[in-house]
Amino acid sequence: MSARILSGKEFATKIKEAAKEDALAFRDEYGFMPGLAVIIIGEDSASQVYVRNKNKACEELGFHSEMIALPADTSKDELLSRIDALNADKKISGILVQLPLPKALQPFEYDVLNRIDPMKDVDGFHPVNVGRLVTGQESLVPCTPAGCVRMLELADIPIDGANAVIIGRSNIVGKPMMSLLLKKSATVTVCHSHTKNLAEICRNADVLVAAIGKPLFVKADMVKPGATVIDVGINRIEPKKLVGDVDYDSVKEVAGAITPVPGGVGLLTIAMLMANTVKAAKLQAGRI
Ligand code: GUN
Image 1 (cartoon, rainbow, N blue to C red):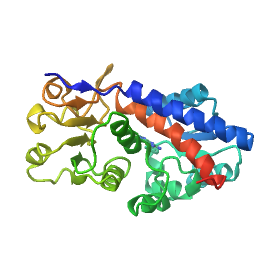
Image 2 (cartoon, rainbow, N blue to C red; image 1 turned 60 degrees about the vertical axis):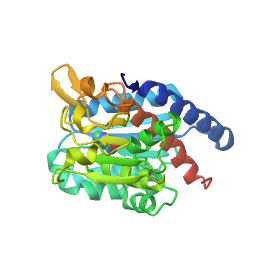
Image 3 (tube, rainbow, N blue to C red; image 1 turned 30 degrees about the horizontal axis):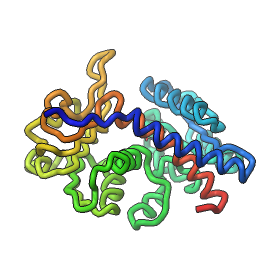
């Protein structure tokens, strides 16, 4: 039997509708809509697409939105002073610096992310928010893992007591996903490139999250029949062909539920960014 397809669009729409309702209630009370600023440095083409989609989502929901495109040779000091200005700007509820940074700025990635006011950190990458997430305190949570967990809840897929296996240990997905699933009482295993018996560990998963950036890495024989498979990968294998980290065509015959690529997790990320922007506005207003 073929798996239930978890449509990113369906769940993203629900998340955005809730965010819009929240934003309108915020506006009624405070007189302005939440605002998102996205800084993009350089010409990375995938990043340009993501940033345009973020802008579109803001328009769709009626949020204030500012896109700041800076040249690839922007200095660290210039970037930091842009962030300072946005930190001080009352119209801006959330700030996102699109990653990856150009090569010359990469050594300063943490300086850049750490400069963002933690209450405006809609990516949830600031150490204050990372620490709050790990300790189970209210925080801004990275959009991709937060969107995936929200989708599991909306789809009524049990997390409490489930064996969750995450392949990938990045700061953006793997590690925050671990914290979120643990908080919801899953038994969590995090695998990575040095893991032994990876396939065997994956076959034990009720919920399997692939976030490694290797095209079609997860094969049908790594998946327990009936498991939920979440594919966070977006890999361009031909100029016009995107595939995930999961071999979708074969895995969908084994899994109980699966997210497609494209049309899966990517849409949830942007929806969650909108939700985080409202949450940031409420945090700054002392409402959370
Ligand atoms: N690049 C790829 N994913 C992300 C993300 O979630 N946030 C930011 N800022 N950059 C990214």
